[in-house]
Amino acid sequence: AEKRGVISEDANIVEPTAGNTGTAQAIVAKARGYGAVLTMPENVSSEKCDLLKAFGAELILTPEADGMAGAIWEAEAIARRTENSFMPNQFVNPANPAVHRQTTGPEILAQTQENIHAFVAGVGTGGTITGVAQAMKTRLPDARIVAVEPAASPVLSGGKPGPTRIDGLGAGFLPDVLDMSLVDEVITVSEEDAYAMMRFLGEEEGLLVGMSSGANAVAASRVASRMEPGQRVVTILADTGDRYFSLAEHFG
Image 1 (cartoon, rainbow, N blue to C red):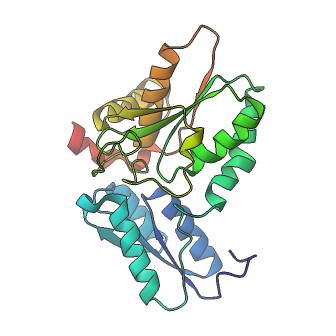
Image 2: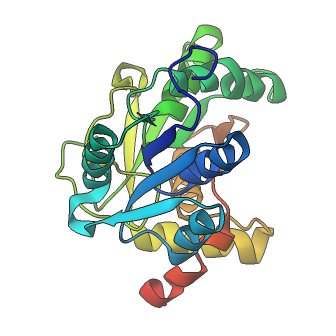
């Protein structure tokens, strides 16, 4: 944005977020001298709220029932009435899938020596799965691309949107940056299964990951169970578990 001249000095960055992208934006805003106003659904974990505030961001919570769409509406309204504001809008910004097409996808191909039969990724903005799939399909056109979404908000599967505690997945609508023509299958994962897998990965594998990672691992294991011996499934564990301890009260 700075290189393109679309953000000015002393600007206020306004962005809807489930917490993780917002954390990065709050850090960058503080380092570059910008303000940061972030909107999030009120059902995100308390740890994420505390973290964003610690980085100096102004945090505005929106009704849980409105989901991520509500956070987007609020951010757009704030940007309209706030002088010298800039809204990156990760749900429509082509830089989102582009960075995964240029970096994440090629890194996966290189690390696996292009021995991949399926790629499984949760869909929030759709940037990760779209960018990685674009990179992967150029080299491995037969690789299966599997999208993951919350069972509580199965929009990709043709269901109705709803609130979910799998932060970062299930925006409740089809984001502009998501290219569904690249997706071969959609798997829905319940909050309970995602939480159980999150706990399992920490206790049994030493991987302290978050809810979206748990959902990805659940879906990846389902895909792997259908594959032939020696075939490889790749997924991404994109969040850290220390932002989700408070969810224990909801899942026991």
